[in-house]
Image (tube, rainbow, N blue to C red; front, side, top):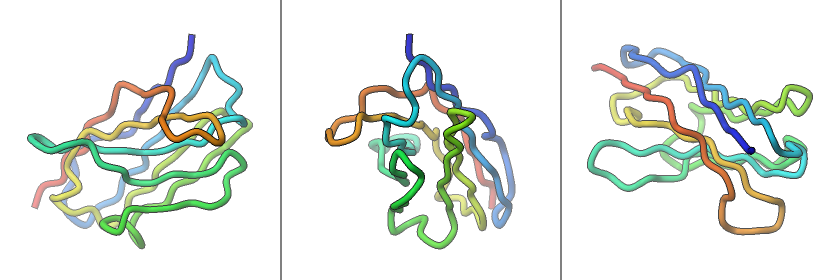
Amino acid sequence: QVQLVESGGGLVQAGASLRLSCAASGLTFTRYVMGWFRQAPGKEREFVSVISSNGGSPYYAESVKGRFTISRDNAKNTVYLQMNSLKPEDTAVYYCAAKVIGVTRYNYWGQGTQVTVSS
């Protein structure tokens, strides 16, 4: 079955960096657009970033633009989110998700990894 497994979260101070990874299995990775989302306590899940199946066309939420970088390694079936200059408001559970090229809704979701940024 399809699995998306995030890792790399943790507790850091404001201004620090983290790199999240999401390892995919059970699917043909190159057929999927990959996205990152996050959900803070008491808030709805929000979009963070997305990358096309071939690694092009990265797109970011305004709140993270210039600080976060999404990338993928199709040979390793893994998508990454490099997060720099972290702020307390970046504190959330971060989820990766996969969707088939050309559709709107994401087909698969990971279990999430906690990122906590202290001030």
